[in-house]
Length: 349
Image (tube, rainbow, N blue to C red; front, top):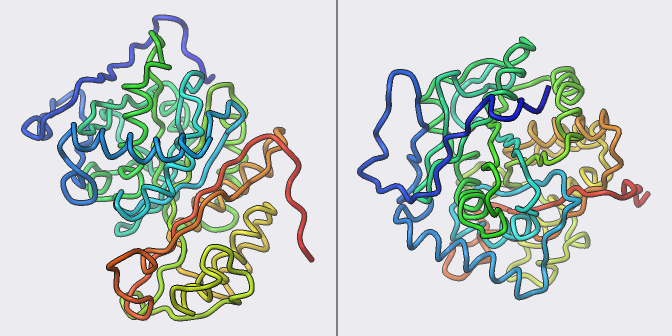
């Protein structure tokens, strides 16, 4: 089951900020994943990181964004905070931290081969951030391990991967430091690194994880950037600029063409058409790094008894930011979406 008996398992999460000098501490029994991307992808100094996360969330709150208790899943980018943090904040400002109990984090494996979906080793008890340790959900992870459908991540593979770690600064601020948590038991994490899975694997994982999506207090975060475009990535296919919304007027024509490519895929995700999204990926070869975690989400939604709609909220491209090289050299797209109760969006066709 999803809930452990009261008092049967104690979560060792701690909200105390962790100085970098302590990041290497491990024990033979309990192991903590270290934040190897702190200090490069985001600020490693706790006070500066908190200020940055609070600034990003505050910009959303100032626009009138409020917590949404109906949000059950989201798609969130995972670049450095200075690039995609403002898009990610569009989701995290809506997370109802007063009711969330557990966060399922699904990210792609960028560098290492992972058999199916990989889970942290049994000895791993927490993921460290500069803002404190986020506790893993041992009962849920043990249940998933017993299913026999998950592999085990070596710690070096887990620590080298950034797709899950880049979600943790927001989660640590909200789950460890928000006064809205009150005296509740800390919310827990279920990190899952998605490897090269087949469509049949995605369907199987969708059926396996759908009951967890339905469970009260569970939220799924799918970590993915969108198009990686330009000479740096060896990908320069163009979409229809007529589909662009954010960059219809540039700054460069390529920005609208890249957005058109992304918007076509985003529409299929919003329609929850896993077959349509797979066909689009095969046809356009769009370099969406989290395509497999997104497809697992679509299969979870298909298998779930909850009727949820997928709404994309924000979209940005690195190449449109001040001081960045033009798309011809390098451009990465960032989009965020929330899943909440409502009818599935129909096809425009």
